[in-house]
Length: 455
Image 1 (cartoon, rainbow, N blue to C red):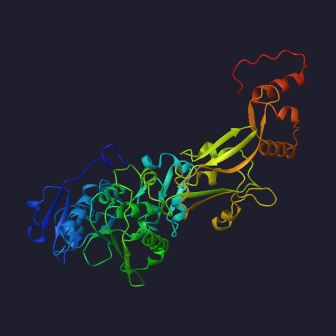
Image 2 (image 1 turned 180 degrees about the vertical axis):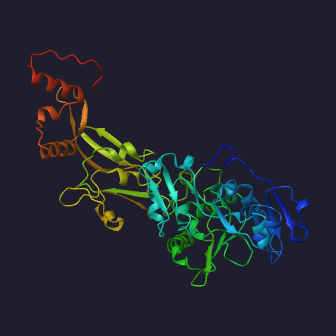
Image 3 (image 1 turned 90 degrees about the vertical axis):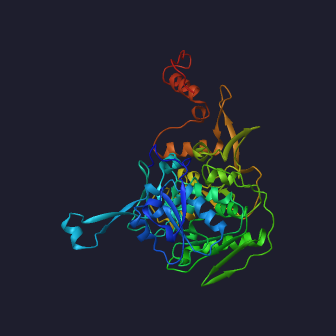
């Protein structure tokens, strides 16, 4: 949870100093780019009493462009002071005698921003599903909870969140957007790389397809992975790099186990801008590229057109259309952000053969879903029909009630529960259902006068 004093609109002033001038009296800002070789960021931060997440080191022979890139990142590091804190032991006995048993240290692990999430956690669990270390749990009442003991800072949750509600303190989503606006070739690696060249980020796996396209739109990209125990998390990232390199060129990747040479560069139509979150940026990518759009499919045999997915969709990517005696659910790929709300609210999903809902493992549950959302390799942006059925109208006033499937499903459930369900009652709007029940109880000649709106 952020406070009123922190906002992506805030820009930090950044000092750029050579290592030879690193004195406390020379530092006039919270953020610092240090130019030099063999520099320990943690020690410098401690000596200068700075947040280590607001200190970046670049090699002495780095280009002016590389210095500028790191400066842009720090200018937009508005989340650095909100980083989680861990306690470390004091160094010597003297500190212990003085009562300085522990010191606080900010760590670069993802933080949850409820303002960005804006209530999506009530039905969205994309971040939880993306974490291979079980460090994230989504509470339907309070939001996203991150277990920092289990968290490895792999960045997969950051890349997965469609609305940028999970971000790294050292590299905000806004930093990526602003960095993409600076023209020039960019070298991007992670903090584990001992060479201080280019722009360092927590892990390459934190970059989504949208981030890659935006960064590429302002110049060629070189990604470097030094190789570590988390290298398997880059499988999808590498797949995306290969696909984009074939289509638009200008992207290279180097690691101890994989080498991708940049192909001939093709011009992109996408123009980097200042966006609020990744969902907004996704809608502004005009180039036809895979993995940018999402594909939604619905099992026509199991869907009852209950309209839950339509009612819950936060972007109206799913819409109900009623026309000429037919009820349909249409899908607009340009609006979909891949939040999976439609999947999670579908009442027909995860039902066993006996017709009972059960808690089953995600890998098995995914096979029983009526609705599926996947990143699309195609670039079809046309609005299209997903499922349809006969539209039933009120027998009295003609108002639309719902699909034939949904009414049959309601009838089936009522009969299973031991309730009576006449078609004459079922195929009426709410007002005329009450009227029918009233007149059946007293007399069909009885005068029905509802006090309120029964729609």
